[in-house]
Figure (spheres, rainbow, N blue to C red):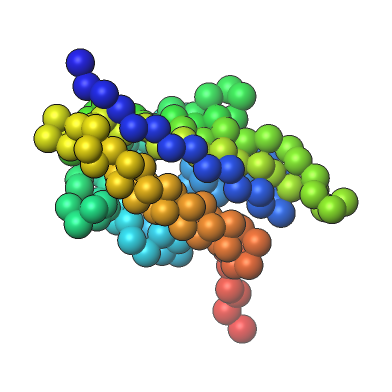
Length: 161
């Protein structure tokens, strides 16, 4: 029975919930706009409420490849489960909630990463792994925030003159 490390991070984004949910779910946009420069994605299949994709990431100096299956739930939450690869059985979950700050409407996104602990890591390196996951998760949600608030989503279409 694998043990897991779980890290959550909330990020407030000054954009409507529907827009934030769409941007988080849009793998093709993430690829085209290079939203997360440290991650590489390849979409294997996509449907209206699901997707299957490959993600490459380097964590603690180890390049990891995982195949994720994504489910978009009726409440707007999104769950990506690793079905193959280094983190098989792990998941990335995003929950979205309307929240105003300083009179500005926006969305509070809470992303939770749950990864299995390799037996060799055990309890000794757990704090280091949690710290690294928190660092990468905080950076990734900041990149989504920047994409939504600065670049704009969806990206504007340039019209030929």
